[in-house]
Length: 204
Image (cartoon, rainbow, N blue to C red; front, side):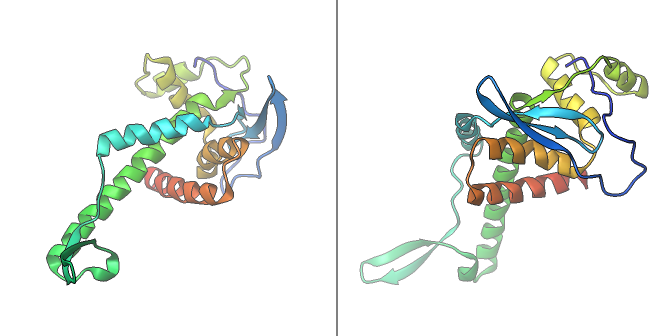
């Protein structure tokens, strides 16, 4: 991406960002939604392709493999039986240590899915409303940033530097394309929790 949006709203001097303006329309038969960030930059969101979400999970599963909880044995009528641990079944220090590793690995997997999904949403589901301001890369280079050659890395850099003005804008990158794709409220709530945790860690 080689251009930036000019601010469409008034400059802010601090505090919580003003409410964003959202409008919906259809482009090419697909329902889209306009969104203005806290920086006053406007983009058009389109639905998240559901098959892309499935491909992301497949990719992460290849990276992490199957993550199974630690187990314990008990005596039963059929002899020794193996059961997966839960938090309430942990007794020894060894059990607790193995459970901590399991939880950490599970959290890492969730963060990886969150990160890849956010990247996919920013590349596939955001169309900046471009104007004639095309010197944003030169400004960042002047500040001292290394400018990537890859156009998609530049697009992510544009999102980070020219679009996002508040953590709510990052959440909008996930929430709006998911809503447009018709993701259920239950899945949306789970996804929002995962994304909010990731956003808090990245912006802390």
